[in-house]
Length: 593
Image 1 (tube, rainbow, N blue to C red):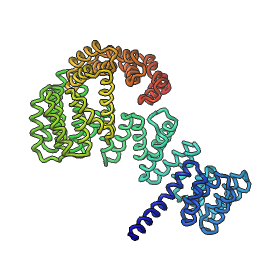
Image 2 (cartoon, rainbow, N blue to C red; image 1 turned 90 degrees about the vertical axis):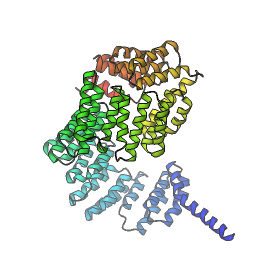
Image 3 (cartoon, rainbow, N blue to C red; image 1 turned 90 degrees about the horizontal axis):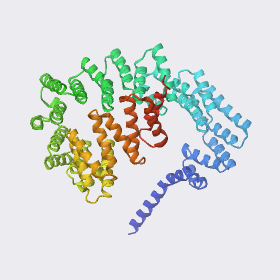
Image 4 (cartoon, rainbow, N blue to C red; image 1 turned 30 degrees about the vertical axis):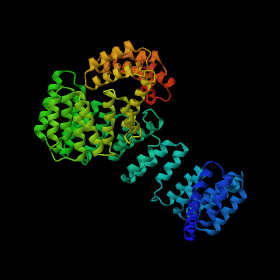
């Protein structure tokens, strides 16, 4: 029994000791300096070599105007560790806080003179100047060291100081000098520069960085500069310009086509089909391996499907699929292509039976569990298309069980919720959606949240959920590519459920279908109705943004587009469209000219 008590006491004591640094820092962070001193003082005494304990204790003394204690602490540290040259700066800064600037300068000069005797001291001395916000002294210390030993690697430190001083051009040049010296620093430089770059091409940092890169590319062409320009354009969602840079890199090196592939996928995901087509066609024209080629062909054909408008277009696409299967075969290497073909047969040509046969055949190839899961999900999608909901739910659930915790399993769970919603089982749909709100996939989590909110909001004033059931049928028809039937069903909702919470959802969904079917004026009318019904609606900012895009891209009415972009800027400051609205407004105003 005594042994148990002893072990328990030892455990509790160890736990308390382990928590001391954490508690001390908590007090420090919350500006409770007196409490922090009580803890940091014994921590420092036991671990004098720990610079963090020393620095936190020193700062606490200074923040509480205990300058004598701070001075004694520094003096004792100098006695204990004569090799720590940066302590002269701490002593000087302690005098500066007391407005004894001449005295402070004496100690700063001592530190700077030490660098002249040994330039390697700059790493601790320069850092100490910077930590105490003495940026001009920090800059001077590094410049002094470099003048004595130009081989010292101090570009990152210099760049950080320039950044803190707001000297953006000097900062960027320092980072670029680092790449000039060794291209292996490219990822490091991207990480640091990324803190200053935004997705706004008119941002001051973006403009300065682009100017410097273009100058250097002209005077001394390097793949690294093209790569950085490509990276900058990607941050600005200018995938066409990024592609030009990556093409230049590939043509010069002929080493890696992966960046072209990455830009193609980004452009595709952001509906920049022209750039996506150019990227994947470039991969096809410059083949590296069969896997890349098949993937590029698949993306190209998906882009064609999205832009197809006639039966003639569909016949050309069907023929293209057959040519690709003839060239690459129907095997484990072309599973993604077979999935795309099954999707095309079902949702564009309305031949679900043929699609199911293709997928049954694909399952017999020697494929991975994840490929099997993808095939099952596609089969289930087709069963939803044919209103065979129970068969679909079985397959989705199998993927959930077989591939637990994977993104594919989460996608299957969302499809279980969506299918349950389509068939009117809103309670089970909500059960699945609650789990998915914390999905590791942000896209799935967002979709789950949107569907959950729709069910919740529409059920509040409608206990029998009649309007929601009709809306779910309309969404199912839309899912099945039966656009006109979906539009007609939404018209019934709008006619019979005026003032219902689902009214603006029905208008928004119908507008989406109007745009798909090229009825843009009807879409405009729906968006205006959403705004008129309730300017505080969760869809109001979406309606403003999509109206602005219609006026800008379809109706070619820039002044009207500016009006709605401006409303987002002033009336919806938390909107996800704010950044792009501001950017488009400036372009329409002529800021880019």
